[in-house]
Length: 445
Ligand code: NDP
Image 1 (cartoon, rainbow, N blue to C red):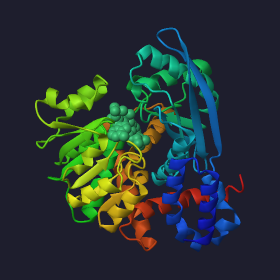
Image 2: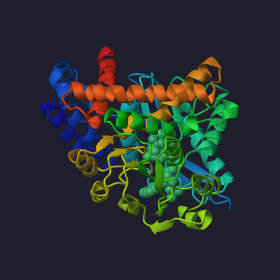
Image 3: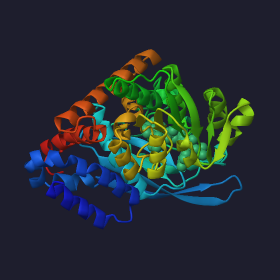
Image 4: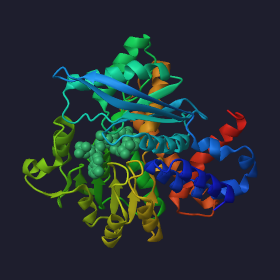
């Protein structure tokens, strides 16, 4: 490893030992940038890496709200404004009881390189709260969202910081947050993406991350002489990303045999009936364990990790971080997996990723593979600025273009840095170079 990179990584480890996921993301990313620093000694002179790895700003605040029984409650919320080197901060908001600063810093760091990879002018950020929307009424979710915005509104804006959805934050939550933002500021300026179609949302945003994942997978498979048609596919999760990834995989002729939620997974050898999953998970906010009864076929297995035990050609982890560990990776390789692409952020552990790569499994990391969501968010920002609405077909065409260009860039960069086929390193370097160039040009800020 380049000695400068190694020194900065040691400093990060010492300073942020308690931020497990942030450290994991830094450990995955920094060593892969070694050859960049070998070639650019001026970056060390400018202390570029020490500056890059620190978020520009972190906002932490309490969110008091009143539940349906009239009892006051309080949650913690954060916004990590990681990098504005190439554009306004951009990244989703997550509502999940596990949310803490370390998780949001890891997500914001990943987001910074991902946004750079899209080629669009957006910086990196991420936010969230340890609020759990599960089991809450619409009224409770609305009051929570409004209270969160009562603080957050002063830190965001169309040219400042543009949030969107993530785990636990979909169209309902974005609508409540945007409504309150508008009420407090009097602005109708496109702050927030993932908005409803009737108030400035973009066609195709809901599908973008899942569809984009498959456009990139298709490009990766084709480069390696493989065809997705006829492949057996595992898609973990059953939220926004997973459902649309499964849908596009089926449209491309693949057979999706398993999906999951945080409690367990279902297996259906004839191919999952996506409408049943959509009804249970998106419409009713229910549990996937209901699938066999509702579909009249398939089987349910307790425990989310069991999903990786099935034989498949393509694995698409689309649920959450660290859901695919070394044991699961070994089971997948034993079952003949040919390619893995991350729909979620950092779903594979460091050990799992290294194992896939050592076994010659094609592996696309989330920074490249799930960039379709933020790419269409950037298109939503453009449409809002121009007061225009593009058709679904137009947005989908641009999404496909962006994903193919990302794959091309990642693949070319990997080859240029003597790591052909290493799409993890390719994505890290390609994403980082643009941010580094902008930081150098902007001086010590
Ligand atoms: P959703 O909240 O819509 O869905 C999350 C899904 O994952 C749910 O089905 C949830 O199940 C399931 N899940 C959570 N934890 C686990 C677990 N340990 N094992 C198995 N399943 C689990 O979120 P999204 O689909 O939006 O996000 C999924 C991932 O994709 C996240 O990593 C997110 O950061 C990433 N991502 C999302 C983008 C977007 O546009 N939405 C863009 C880029 C990345 P349950 O119902 O039980 O909670």
